[in-house]
Every structure is written in C-alpha cells, then in structure tokens.
Length: 295
Image 1 (cartoon, rainbow, N blue to C red):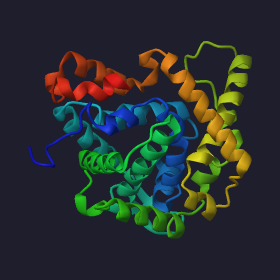
Image 2: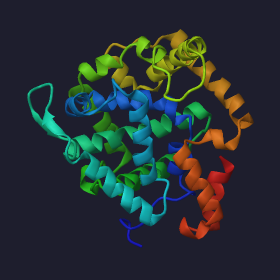
Image 3: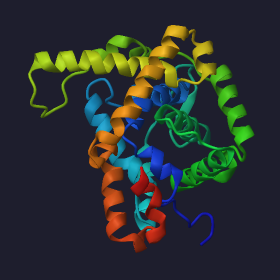
C-alpha cells in the first residue's frame, strides 16, 4: 500500500487516545481553539446549531468524525468523503468582513492541527509518559489521520518542529475572540447545560450533577489550553489551578481501571474495537489489536 492508501488501525496511538472517552474532557479546549479562528468561528456561528441543540451537535460530530479513524479502509474512505461533503456548503463572511469557506485549506487544517497537541496533553493527563519515539510515532499517525480526512500533505506541517511553530504563530497572530468563543468562554456555559434528550433523571439531580461536572470541565478546559493561548487571552493559571488540575488527573488515573471497558471508549471507537477483535483481518491482523486490548 502507498502512504495515501494506508489507514490507521488498532495498533496505532491515535486509536488509543482519540477514542478514549476522557477525550470528551479535552474537547472544550480544542474546539475553543478551533472557533477562535475567525473563519471557523463565523462558520460555527452562522451554520451550526451549537446554541439551540448542543447535545445533538456533539452527537453528530461523534457520528461523522470518529469513523474516519475507527473503521476499515473502505469505511475510512467513505466517511472521509462524507466529512468533506458536509463542509462543502459552509461558507460566508467572517467577523472581519472576509469571505471564508470551510474547505479552505487553512481552516480545514486548523481544526486538525488541534488534534496532535490534544493527544499529547491527554496522554499526560492519563499518566502516560511518552518517549520521543512515541511522540514522533503519534505525529506521523496524526499526518495520516489528516490524509484520511482529505487534507493534503502540503497543507500540514511536515515535522514536529514545524507543527509547534505553526500552532504558536496561529495562536498569537490569527486567533481572536468572537461571538462563538464568548458564548463558550465562561463557566456558566458548562454548569448550565440543558438535560440531554431522553435522560431520565429529575431536574434537581441533573442541576447538581451538571454543576459538579461542569465546574470540573471548565477547569480542565483551562488546563488543556496551550500556554500560548492562555497568555494571549489572559486566562488565569496559577499554582492553585495547576494543583487542582493535577488532583483531578490523579483521581481519574485511580478510577479508570475500575470502570467497565465499554465506558472507557466513545461509542464509535468501542464499536470498531469490538469489530476488530472479531474480524482482525479487516483491521490489519491479530497483532494489531495489542494497544486496544491493553488500554
């Protein structure tokens, strides 16, 4: 297979981290970085139902993006095409009066850019000490994931050094506060989310749960931000903030092995992992299942 034909499988670090359900605690950070780009923020503000239907939007994102990674080669190609087609009609004028299109390489790639730093930060939060070889492997897999999304090599940083330079430069010179970042940029957004459709708990219990989980999510969001982003937008991160972040991390490390395996994966990842265990020939063979089984 050529590099473009190869797809990532259960032996990859991307499979290990991108479908780990703790990634849901990382997403408020990475998605905020994404919408801080004026073109992406305008696209979300003008074309997304993130205000009216936050749970539905999250469910639709999981249903379309995760199968671009957790899938057979044929499924990867199918969902990669669907993902691009979904974005084809998203266009307009951004907050600076400039035209944008969701498939513009800068915008489409910026969404993907946030994935690599996010996986590294999630690994650290989980207590995994990645070697330099691991980080390079993850970077190469990140490039391949981009190809599966339909991103060209020339639109992605070719090396880790180029990646960090790109991330830092974009944060410092391209990102800006806008209606989308302001909407999700305060603690109340996370502590006052509406009850998910169909959830059978009382309103009182939901409010209590939402306050506790939302407060934790808000704090983790700040901790998962790159340092350059916190500096650029004046987000406080003092000794107490760091200590609380670490305490939350240690708590999750202790509790995680006690959870049912199914609970440790987002649904799309868990479905693919089960299928790969039953039909390893569709995912690169029996040996490729070692990471998924060890996680």
